[in-house]
Image (cartoon, rainbow, N blue to C red):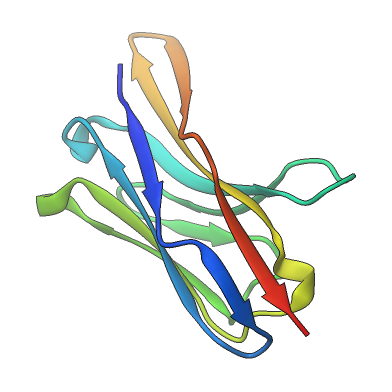
Length: 118
């Protein structure tokens, strides 16, 4: 199991930046993949960015603006968000996939609000 705690959300103006943090309760070396998802009001949850031990991937809508990274010593994954747009307003949630043998287990943080004003 793992507990995930997000921080760093808030209210910013368009064009500004925020950095979200996701602190894991276990060594993230043991986690297959971690990611950030977001869900805006009235919309489906979407994958924003994912990171594994050797790769990263991004939604097309955030490529070039957002960067996902990890600090193994702090068991923390970050999402640096630059050039924020009102369309980025959503609840952002941290996700972790842990594999035990052939089975995968999904874990979620509680979510954190990001609001971008125009």
